Structures are given as C-alpha cells and as structure tokens.
Amino acid sequence: MSNALVTEKKLSNFINGEWVSAQQDHFAPVVNPANGEKLIDVPLSSQEDVNQAVEAAKKAQKEWALVPAPQRAEVLYRVGYIMKERKEHLSQILTMENGKVIEEARGEVQEGIDMAFYMAGEGRRLFGHTTPAELKDKFAMSQRAPVGVVGIITPWNFPIAIATWKSFPAIVAGNAVIWKPATETPMMAYEMAKIFVEAGLPNGVVNVVFGSGSEVGDAMVEHSDIRVISFTGSNETGRTIAGKCGQLLKKVSLEMGGKNAVIVMDDANLDLAVQGIIWSAYGTSGQRCTACSRVIVHESVKEQLEERLLAEIDHLTIGDGLDEQNKVGPIINEAGLRKIEKYVQIGQEEGARLLAGGNALNEGDLNKGYYFAPTLFTDVKPDMRIAKEEIFGPVLSIIPVKDLDEAIEVNNDVAFGLSSSIFTQDINKVFKAQRDLDTGIVYVNAGTTGAEIHLPFGGTKGTGNGHRDSGQAALDVFTEWKAVYVDFSGKLQRAQIDVE
Ligand code: NAD
Image 1 (cartoon, rainbow, N blue to C red):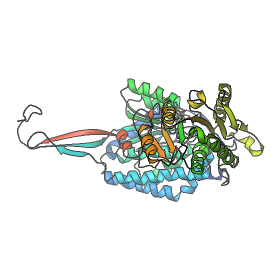
Image 2 (image 1 turned 90 degrees about the vertical axis):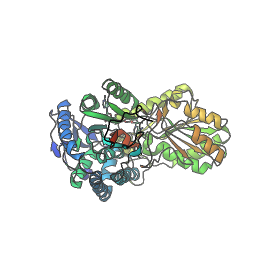
Image 3 (image 1 turned 30 degrees about the vertical axis):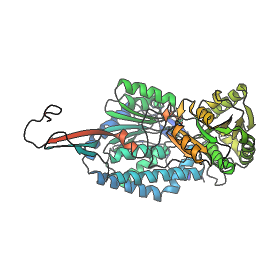
Image 4 (image 1 turned 60 degrees about the horizontal axis):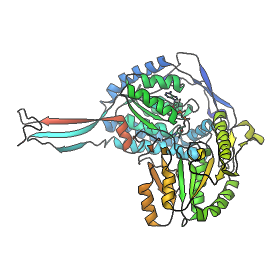
C-alpha cells in the first residue's frame, strides 16, 4: 500500500462547509511513523481562523437547534452508513498516519460507526424527566437543551473514535462544533469533514481548525463563545486547559492518562490471562490510554506467568501496520520513542529486572520508522516510577503481591483511575474487586482495553474531572438541564409558601 490513498498535498481548514486556507501560510508535515515518509502538510492555523470558525458555528447552531432532534439524527444515520461503506479506506489512512496495525484501525473505525448509530438513536430519546409539582394545577419537567458552540480537542492515538465520541452527541443534541485534531493525525478529520458534507450536515455545524495546541487549542479554550471544551489528551495539557476554563467558568470535560493494571490471582486461567495481557500491553504499541502497563500477580503464579508472557512476546511480529502479518506497529514519533527509552533506563536504575526488550528497533526496514521492542520488567516495586507514571509505550511491569487485598491496594495506589482488570475463577473475588478497584472501567477475565460505546468511558482521580465520554453520560457534557414549570391555576402560587 502506498501514499496513493492520500491525494491532497496540503490540508485546509473546514469552516462553514467549505475548505478554507488558514490565515497564515505555516504548515507542519504529517509523517507516516511506520516508514518516515511525509504524507501531507497540515496548516498551523491561528486565533483568527478559530474566530472565523466560531462565527460560522454560532450562526449555524441557532438554526440547527431548531431542527427536530429525530431529523438531526437522520444525518448521523447517514454518517454511519457512509463510514461503513468507507471503512477500509478510513482504516488504511488511519494506519498510515497513526501507525496502529490495520486490524486495530478497523476496530477503531468500527467504534465510530457504532457511535454514529447509537447517537442517532438518541434523536428519538434525549430523555428528560417529568415529575409532580408541589402545587396544584402546576406541571414540572426537566429537559436537555443544547449548550451552543462547543470545542473538541482530540489526541493522535485514537484520532477517529474519540472524535466521534465527542462530536456525535454534540451534534444530535443541537450544538455546533469546533474540532481541533492533533497535528500528527489530521487526515481522519479531513475524511470525517467530507463525510459530514455528503451526509447533508448543514454548513457550519461542524468546523475543523487544524493547528497546534498552544495556538489553536488555546484560542478555543479562551474564546468566550465556545461554551464547552471537551478534551482528551495528556494530564499536563488537561491541567492547563482546566485552569483556564476555571477562570472563565467554562464547562470542561477532561479524559486523560492512565496507569492500568491487570491483576492475576492464583486461581486464574493463566493462558487466558496471558492473552489478555499481551493484547492490552502491546496492542497499539502500548499507546492506548487503557493500555495495561502493570501486571499485579499473586506471587505463587508469578514465574509461570512470566514464562508464558515471554513465549508470547517472542511471537509478536513488529513492523508496518499495513502488513496484515504484523501485530505491533510503530511509536508515533521520535519524541515518543525517546520518552520510552528514558523510562526503561529509569526502571533499570530503580532496580527492576529487565526480562525482554528495552530497546528501539533499527534492523532492516524498521530503521525508517519509530519502533520499540515489546518490553517486560519484573520484580517491580509499587513505588517505582515505572509503576506509577504513564509511559505510553510497550513497557510492562510485573509486580508480585501476596493476596487480593494487596493487589487492590497496589492497583489503587496510583494517581490515575482509568481501567483495571482481574483474572480469577472465584466469584467472591470478582465481586470484591469490581467494588473496590478505584477505576472508571473494570474488566473481569479480560484485559484492560475493549470499551463498548454505549457504556460510559472515563476514569477517576487524575484521569479525568468527573465527566465521561461515550454512552448516555456523553450527553451530559453537551447539554444543559433546563427545568420548566407551567402553572395553569390562573393565580400566583408561590413555591414553598403557598403549600397547605
Ligand atoms: P496532548 O495533551 O499532547 O494533546 C492532546 C490534544 O491537545 C492535541 O490536539 C494537542 O494539540 C492539544 N493541545 C496541546 N496543548 C494544548 C493547549 N495548551 N491548549 C489546548 N490544546 C492543547 O496528548 P497526546 O500526546 O496527543 O495524547 C496522549 C495522551 O492522551 C495520553 O496521556 C493518553 O493517556 C491520553 N488519552 C486519554 C484518553 C481517555 O479517554 N482517558 C484516550 C486517549 C488518550
């Protein structure tokens, strides 16, 4: 497969249904991490471009909010069908710009398709509540109202799924969207904008402004007419955004990093546990927010587990994700590679024992891209930095424990709270773990990754700020609750006062 899939040389912003050049003539190259080839140039837009997009969005939103929700949903159904028809095309471009292996890219595109149909269904729900009023001849209800113009800021590691988790609920609820994708992976946004046009979304309801976080992202956060920021990315960025939104009293939804663990108890089906761990730790080269980077294992099965993991690691084929044979693709860029190397060094200095990997891969064609060997550390102590900090690469740490209580304690004793998993055959342990694991997602006898779009997605503690993407919970980010009272008594009835 070649660059033939990418026919443009330079991307433009998508504002008010048109492709518009950015105000300043600055571009950054988008590079295929599998082979270092340049795919396209992405504009580095400025505050003026954001302002232009917001003006278009404000105008469009007023009319879009008045379109009955079932009709708004019709557009999302069409988006879903077009994505379905174009699934292979989208998946291949996704692999080229992000590096994840094609099977995973197809899975990610499927997540977007699922989200389109799920949120389209909301067009005929968007439920509010009716409730009895406390006074006679009075009616009370609450309903969801759109917020207005919303900003979504997305990372490179799931460039299409996360954008659909955010934009589809925003659209069906009657908002207009300004979307800033990561500069590493802009082509998914370009493809989605084309799909929105074909699906008949009115001009200005979704606008894409390409550019850096510090310029375009910041301009969105600061813009007084963007009433919500929905962000997914690193903690460092999330914290900066949250601080600014706090000052501006702007609603902000943050989905950030993880330090996810698989717990393996002494009664676990070890073969199954190994499969779940390998998939969660080394899939997407460990660059998932839900990646497993810790295995908390009962000491009595530690050695057996290590042996089986090492055997499986040996079978992982590494290379360009467009080759169906490969199971592990590249790291997103040079900086990502260097960060992983740094953590391996930290782990060794801290006294963890390296069982596999630990180095960048440069042999043959791998030399052209950014590859890192699947890495396994053992005898890791819970307080080591490699057991506490997000590495975002294929680096897994084995931490031995003596029982379930200690496993849960170790799992919870990190700054993040996204995903956790337990392998056990004991129903009592299952129920204790699902109650006591302090993460937004818990898996039983499965790895730490594999969320379904109709359930809420997000985490506790440093992973987020209490909001969720996906599922019904996503609607809470993009709607305001409006309480409506209708008094049909014909007289002034004062709440709390004129009650008998
Ligand atoms: P990042 O924080 O570097 O960038 C994310 C987005 O924010 C990009 O579009 C970037 O341009 C923008 N940005 C950067 N600085 C900004 C600023 N000052 N103001 C506004 N926007 C700004 O993150 P990344 O490296 O692209 O993504 C990896 C991170 O995302 C990891 O920490 C991963 O765990 C996290 N992530 C979390 C989830 C989740 O749902 N919890 C899902 C996927 C990824």
